[in-house]
Length: 327
Image 1 (spheres, rainbow, N blue to C red):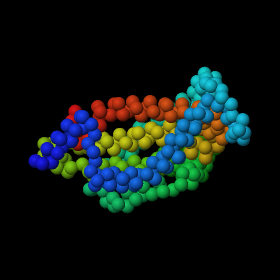
Image 2: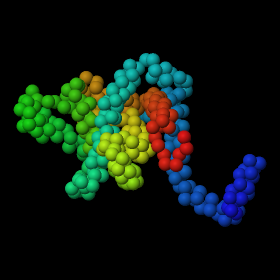
Image 3: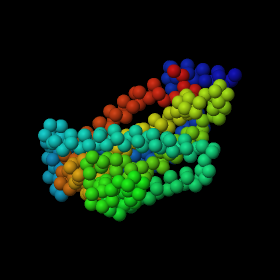
Image 4: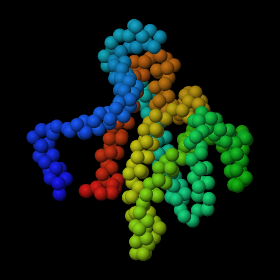
C-alpha cells in the first residue's frame, strides 16, 4: 500500500504546489528532453517559424523576385481572397465536391478490403496483402502516368475490358473518355486515388487483428449473424483507427494537388472541374510569384481544415470507442 500512499501524497502536494523532483527523476527528464530535442528543433525551424512567416506575408505585398521591396498592405489580400477572387470559391467548390465523392468510396473500400484480407478462409492472404500494399511504394508521378495509359480511351485496358464484357462501344474516338469528360472525371480521379489505398488497408487490418476473438465466439454462440458481428463488435472496436483514417483522408483531400497537376498542368481541364484549391494556391504563389496573396490562400485553407477536423473531433465521442474509457 506504500505506492498508494505515495500517490495520494503527490496529489495533495500537487494541489498546493509542485513537488520537487528527485535526482533520478531529473536525470530521466533530461534524457527525455534530449531524445525529443532534435524533433523540437526541427518542428520550430521547419514548421512553426514558416507558418508564422506565411501569416506575416499574408499582410504584405511580397514578390519573390523582389523580397526587399515588400510593403505592408493590411487586409488587402484577405479582402481580395474573400470578396474579389471568384477562383477561390470555384476551387473550394471543386475540392469539396470531389471530397464528397472520393472520401466515402475510399473509406468503405479500404475497410471492406481489410476485412476480406483478414478472413481466415481467404487463400493466399499474405500474397494479396502484399499486392494491395505494393502500389503505395510507387512514386505518385509514375503512378499517375501509368493510370493515364490505363484510362486512355483508345489503348487503355479498362475501356477494352468494358467493351469485351458488355459489348458497349467503349474504345476509340467515341469511347469512354475518362480524363476528358467532366461528367465522370471525379470517378476517374477516384480510381487513380485507389492506387494508394494500401496504407488505409494496412491500418484497418492491424486494428482488425487486435479485436479479441472471444467477442466473436460469444456472439456466434448467441446466434449473431455476420452483419450483426460487424456492426456490434468489429466497427466499435476498430473505430479509433477509422477515426484516424478519416482525419488523414480529409486533410489529404483538402491538399489534393499532384494528380491534377501531373495530368493537365493545373489548367482545370475539363471545364474547370479539376481546378482544385491547392492548384489555385500554386498558380498564385509560384507561377505569378505573389507570395503575399498565396500566403493568404494557404491560411484560408488551414482555417477551413482546422474547422472541419475540429468538428470531427467534437463528434468523435459519440461514435469512437476506446477500451477502458468511461462515458
